[in-house]
Length: 351
Image (cartoon, rainbow, N blue to C red; front, side):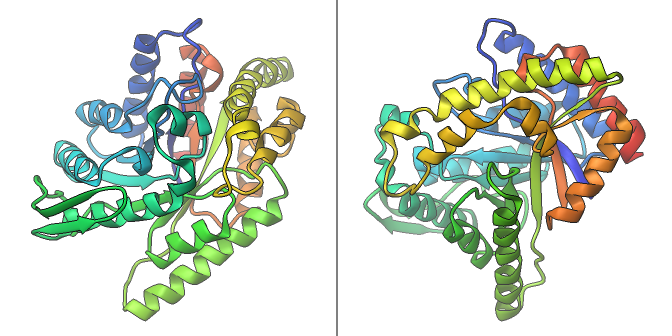
């Protein structure tokens, strides 16, 4: 199994300042790098405690690059619908140079209506804008001169500079949640896959990951490519010592994370789009979910080391994934808790 850290800040600003959050996050990244973990991932969001501390994963990963040496850096994910492809191609190539070829670029469609509305992007066009931007970024990475004329951007003879350090370009990931079309598109383009535990039944996600893997392998064979499908799952993690600590962490920190997520998805009930069928159900499902149920379903792992080890084995047996990247920054938890979790995980399950 591959392991790493997956950052998704849920800070309100009341209990942890941006300065404190990023100071702690960078300390965790150094520990992860020194301990042989494989990945550090950061997500892009705006305007809300749900991810809003990090509108720029590339900026964060540039700071991570300056204090680490080996660990791979994943944008998990940048939201291409809110960016011009020339900007994305140049910024990612710059970071690939700064980190000496350790960058992996993850893309996601975005799904929160308030982000689209505030940034003036039509949510109904998100899928085509998403795919066209990614395809254009790859052309800019790999071709000497690129011309493009789409409804979203138009340019002629663009010579993207600098070019990526990695050849032909950094590995590409995509996040998929609900749509079979998204899983299939990532497979057909031989991109790696980022997922989270399903709000609904596990069988629904298992079927879509298997669809992705089968389509990927067929496509790779068709193209004569040696690429293999790769799937990482992000899961919240706190390692505790007593039952009381487990119950407190579940209620306080996982409860905070769930409340922030619920509030962010509230806009899905009033401002969603035909491009996101049934996404209003996400909010209603989250409202019905408790932190205790979330932990029971192993959508978050909170407990002593022995329980965590058994839970990882169970997750491996259920989902066809290649690795887990841990969210240990959730709930505005104190630095000593997240640091203790990471060190105990490394000491007891990695080394």
